[in-house]
Image (cartoon, rainbow, N blue to C red):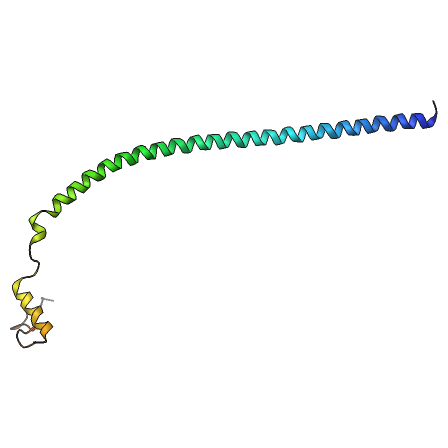
Length: 122
């Protein structure tokens, strides 16, 4: 064999080794990417299951609250119908005083005390 043939064989072997290692490295990187994608999908599925469980609990609680809300509404209706909410808040003297103040008739009733006002002891 001549030197050129040996050099050609060595070059072909080195090229095959380089091509094989480049291909193996690509497969290795692809397998790492695939593992990461599968982990992300598994995590997303786990999160979805957790959210589904939480939403189910919330729906159950809301159904209970709606039942309580109806009961509370009935109680409010009963409270509004009690006679305590129908009484007059102002006494007749106060109504007369307010009407006089609105008319500008300050002399009708004085807002000043009629006599001496007692002071608290020091």
